[in-house]
Image 1 (tube, rainbow over the protein chains, first blue to last red):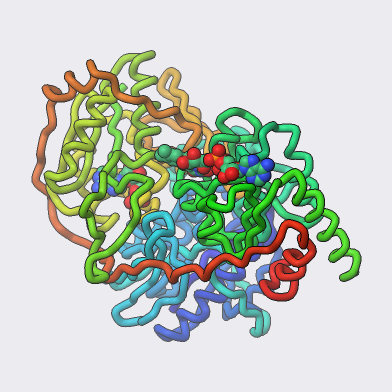
Image 2: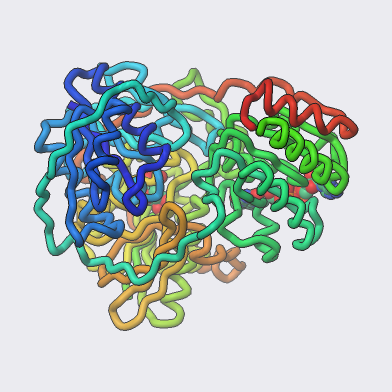
Length: 324
Length: 244
Ligand SMILES: Cc1cc2nc3c(=O)[nH]c(=O)nc-3n(C[C@H](O)[C@H](O)[C@H](O)COP(=O)(O)OP(=O)(O)OC[C@H]3O[C@@H](n4cnc5c(N)ncnc54)[C@H](O)[C@@H]3O)c2cc1C
Ligand SMILES: Nc1ncnc2c1ncn2[C@@H]1O[C@H](COP(=O)(O)O)[C@@H](O)[C@H]1O
């Protein structure tokens, strides 16, 4: 049996949840048994049932007012109880921020080895071998989990969603909650509202010191809006306050893996690439033909961003108009 | 306030990675450093200690060749260092070693980095917290401590969350926590005589092992498009790459 934690945000699932369920269903085929999902919080039964499409045969729904926020410690305890109740030999979670706050705890509770940040299906069920990135994307490693129970934390955007199944059965699951799991209290949630969250974005437009001044980001934001993309930036740009810190990608910022990453006026330093090199397609726009970014990019234009970006905006507009 | 800061010994961020027979990192000529996130955690611990008093201990699970990294942590300002003498080949093993040390000392705050930049796992903090039955705040960008209560900010999907926790607790540091400090000459001199205790490992249970390594497939050469044909780029992204 395989258990998958189907993470929700304000009661709704996102693509990374469907990826995790599709992935878990495939693992169930490899090791035997069914794929069962567990949801925590206010997910409607109608939405929960939908997880069947992605391969879950059953959904254990845990509803408790104490669990509406992300209480990491209690969440890991609930997931461990669900895993034990179905006799799961493998547990899959998404390696989102939520996943990062529970993965290790969950693994210790189940005395299970953890492959954190898996990027593909196990290449073998016995020994249970999972591939993941290492050295900030500069290498790949095969991790063998030797414990009886396995926990796999799947990187978002690295597995194809597979929606061919039928509705799942939804059951309420009563987990025992422990007072000591509630020592951390949430005081405030600051949502990065309105805009597309960088970690979930499929398209990202990013710019660096080549843009010279904060006011020049107007065109970057315009391009992002036309594409429906999130915006990002290099470290020095966030350090001097031209852009907010949460936009900084790279070794010391966030790591992203969108379908498209457009880098404008960014040199492509190794620490920057560490955060973006897993993007499926990379476009570099830089006035220096020798900029290292061109070695990491799929497409490139050598030239002045102030000339190219406005043209790009126009061309994207044309494409969108044409497609509508 | 007693701090324990977990220090991972990792290749410098500019290192060109290669592997020996696909079995291990080729460490010839590689410069090892304090994991950048651990350095942020260490700096924040020092800032709080300087304001409110206390001690900052750093710990590494590793072989003798990691000692220069621990000395650097001492040069930055840690009071003493512990090295648990075993190869850190599995997160569970590492967390267990640190938990054993923590059980014998009453630390108020245990800090780690968000992830180590070698295995990029981010497992140790939550494993350690579970072993010690302590709360854990992961990917924390802020930490303040006042009268036995800590206020932290952590990254969550789609934003940030402000939280409070009782002491003791574990937290893993993300950028924003503190700006790393460059050790000065006095710090470097002082570090030479600060205590660095070597402990033997307790048990050797592992639950995972990294059996093979390889470099990611080489990227195809970049397709350059003339700056006068920006429309071509948009077309390629639409029809060839199919990403827009
Ligand atoms: C420990 C450590 C961690 C780090 N972590 C990160 C990190 O997480 N993220 C990160 O980004 N950096 C990080 N850095 C910094 C990194 O090494 C680089 O310094 C940084 O990425 C450079 O930013 P940049 O490309 O915006 O600026 P620059 O290096 O100044 O590059 C600007 C680029 O813009 C081009 N340009 C100039 N004018 C134009 C124009 N008109 N049109 C088009 N192109 C133009 C230039 O040719 C140049 O290539 C880290 C460094 C260290 C030591
Ligand atoms: N060998 C080690 N010794 C001490 N601390 C470590 C070690 N490995 C990892 N850590 C700590 O755990 C954090 C997360 O590491 P990881 O789980 O390996 O990504 C690091 O930032 C360190 O603070």
